[in-house]
Amino acid sequence: MPVITFEYQDLQELGIDISKEKLIDILPMMGSDIEDFDDETIKVEFFPNRPDQLSVEGVARSLKGFLGIETGMPYYPSESSNMEVFVHEGLKEIRPYISFAVIENIKMDEKKLKQIMEFQEDLHWVIGRDRKKVAIGIHNLDVINGPFYYKAIGKDEITFIPLDSISEMTPLEILQEHDKGVKYAHLLEIHDKYPLIMDKDDNVLSMPPIINGELTKLTEETQNLLVDVTGTDQKAVNQALNIICASFGEIGGKIKTLKVVYPDKTVVTPDLTPKKKEVSVKNSNKISGLDLKAEDIKKLIMKARMDADIISDDKLEVTIPAYRVDILHEVDIIENIAVEYCFNKIESYLPDIASIAHTNKWYTSDKLLREVMVGLGFQEIMSLMLTNEENHYHNMLLDEDERVEVSQPISKDRTMIRKSLLNGLMEFLEDNTHEDLPQKIFEVGDVMYIDIAAETHTKVVKKMAGAIIHSNANFTEIKSTMATVMGNLGYEMKLEVLEHPSFIKGRCAKFSDISDNGKVEGFFGEINPEVITNFNLEYPTVAFELEFS
Image 1 (tube, rainbow, N blue to C red):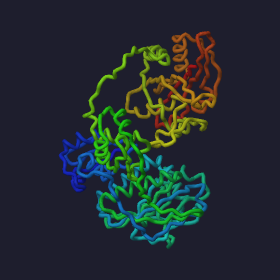
Image 2 (cartoon, rainbow, N blue to C red; image 1 turned 135 degrees about the horizontal axis):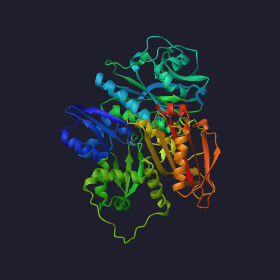
Image 3 (cartoon, helix red, strand yellow; image 1 turned 90 degrees about the vertical axis):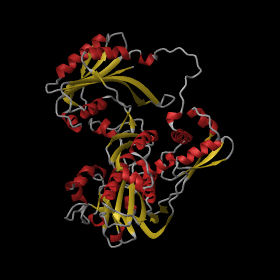
Image 4 (cartoon, helix red, strand yellow; image 1 turned 120 degrees about the vertical axis):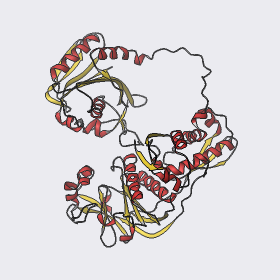
């Protein structure tokens, strides 16, 4: 999760005079984790569902509400810049959406430049899925002239100086030779043309989502900004721009809109129009366990920096600012009510229900599986069911197939529900390369498949997987391990040759149970060296995965 660093003095400059000790007590109550602090600075980790808090201005805005310094929805007025952006037809299949804003009267210094860059990269991670879905460019407006053009340009059709370079390069050369180009080349290399943003004099501002041009680089003298956000999801593009504008608006930046002219429509960005939702007093009290009146709830909503109007004794209409992209449902508002009330003040109590607990049948076999694996010297790990296509498919050399995807992921790391446990084991080994070898790990967990015949169109299946890494890990070792595991579980193992992309050809086997004790099947072998490299490992690795029905 993103970690932001700011100085206590930054909060004072934004109107919050609070002691370090009190700040450290309060921030966790607002849904954050304090990573580190000293006498001058503090490092805070925020959940990805609150990208508006990824800047010190966003933190200060929330703190003012929590402390009662400022309540209600902040308003950031905007006016037209009288500038236009023209989007060319050729971008429809490449990177079709773009939003622009002008921010004037920004006071820039070295610290602010660093904060802007960190804020931009955090948004790339949280909203942008590492620039695939959304990419942001922030430019020095004083050295360029509108109107602006968002074009699809041939790979060698034009040259410009990319950021932090001294030589002109073609778009193709940037993807092949520039550090940022090589890192993000996979986002564009499948296309014949690449997106460029240019001004009326054909100056190149940016090659999204790769890199900005050196011409519009921000300096300590920069006062007026042009912000562009491009992407493959129009909603996410607009959300990112609104968050950025609100952050600059918090420090007095003057926000101006631009007309974005598509081949088939014209839109004005940014659109900071707030949205409205209703919240029930009854539902709020039921979920939070509190006993609040409509007037009490209104005050707490305003502390959360939203506006509220009481409709009846049980209903309030809540006005939600455009930068609060996390408010999707009534329960999100209720969560904010509980946060502002302060979780520490909510008294816990036992439910007035008589019940007798027993082990869920789904988990009765887990104890035996764990005992067998621990007895063989393995250490258990537990990973999330949510993963991402990069680790689950690409790094494991697998082709993408049908899967359950997250419709609105809060980060690029959690975009789908896993169908295998193996990539989770490899990620764990990658995170623990500093530990001594050998390492022997296993996991018992659920995966999910698409099943159209089921009521939910999904099917949950239990799996167990294990991995061993050390300098001499080999097929014989993992075969011996599997024979012992299957024997201890009461299964009789039948082996067949298996070609699996994640394993070395000729060193992978499929197994199934031929006894009458139940159905189980799986595979084991030596991990493909390319997979090992993809997870930044350096030693031979063997692994297995078995599935229970």
